[in-house]
Image (cartoon, rainbow, N blue to C red; front, top):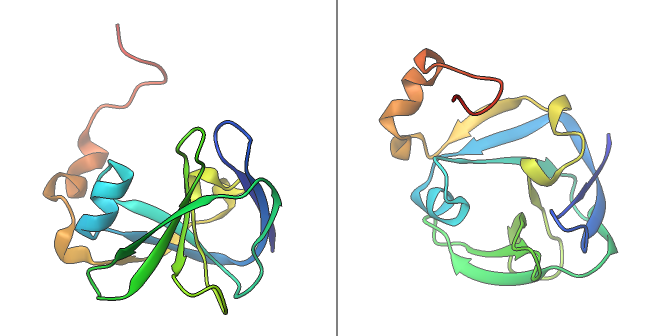
Length: 136
């Protein structure tokens, strides 16, 4: 499946290939911290299929909880996180941040990883009232 994506300001755009059910949720503490959220959802792109059609992302290389070096790609203008991939430039496999993918509604996570770090309240999220807009 061909997918496209961009950062919030539109400075960076990309296209990639991915299998339709190739989405994961990561609960590791690094993903919580780097996303400023309770988890991070990603779509795994086919190896070597990501092409940046506009702009060049900035990268920050960190050491993951697994010990692997991971390059974190983001827009240097608006700060949108776009992906994580191996630090080496050859043979990159991208975990594209689902919120930046245009076709995000077509993907459903097939697994959750680093579940020992899951925030306890996520198990009861379906019990929290939901509103169409901000409640008055």
